[in-house]
Figure 1 (tube, rainbow, N blue to C red):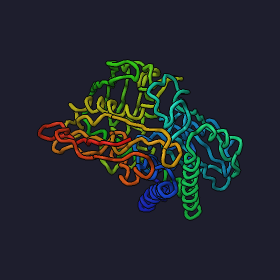
Figure 2 (figure 1 turned 90 degrees about the vertical axis):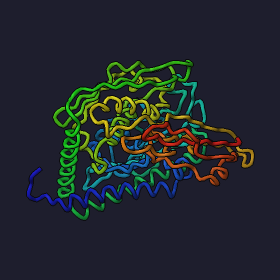
Figure 3 (figure 1 turned 120 degrees about the vertical axis):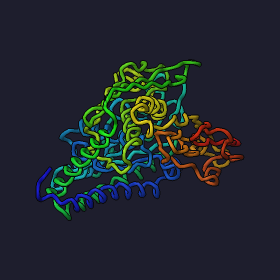
Figure 4 (figure 1 turned 90 degrees about the horizontal axis):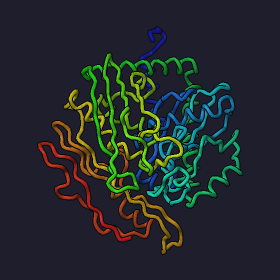
Length: 458
């Protein structure tokens, strides 16, 4: 865009304001949610999207969730095309229509200005339970989606400002924990904050000015991304990694293979040759895999790149349907977010010959523990994902040790540990030991990050 009416200073202010709105939405969730998964571990994201689902701005508490909001937003837009009204609110978690994980429930609210949708305010948070065969949603025995969670395709939960009581009651009758209903209300509150912030922007500056400068920000983001990608030598690179265990067959191994082509300021990732989906829950839906690609690439590029629609334009992805990174219906996919670990390894290994100074050695793989049951002291059911104990170290970089106790690569340090005392308040567990594990870093000139040893009385 070269229109003389464009003001680069205002564009910068607009970019910062949109980001600030998403952060304010995030603070709303931190202060109003009940589950420690949300208000302590911060396992959520917030975002603003254009009328067609274009990324305007995102908070990135958990990076794997951030770029997975857009596919879900577009699924809602497609499902209710021409049937969206002021005051509507939509829920979504379905991994076969843009969702990344069943327990990561998204809330979407359209923002209307002068009778038309100008944006969508969205929140996505990891709910403590969303039905299914196993409390907490992690069911290692699952072979299909219905054994994991209640599927929520794009669903209007509030219509023109009025709660759809029958739909609401049906939904939460299939959830074990009352706090989930309260946390969904908190997520809805977060979208109210987003709606208000965007509406104020439009009222203050006018629709034409705001939208013209949003397009400018997209174009600027694309230009910067192309410049960053052009710094990677042109060529074709292949990387592989292994997924260990499918949840059902001891010793099973599954290949992730990616061919990356870098040329002319663009990048193409082709996963032809990746193994088929597994019979268990160790599969990823497309949204989770696409988000993993973006967070991995962004680790290799300028950290000041904007995260808007423009940066996606030079990135082209092909993940064959039916493979472990794009599982087909009705596959179980609960482990999909954590497949970002071996997935990122394959990308790093592919690009290591091209940019050896930027890629990371492998990060820790997930050792996940979800404990559910009846709290004997309070007489109520509880779910604890034990985020405290699943945070190993990151891989080293050329010239830099890895980070200690940072967690999985899909969280990129955003997933916080539970407060020790609050862990014992919310659950019947006692924390006996939580400390760095000696010699767990992966020795070398530049060592990896230390993991931790945790001992609990359950």
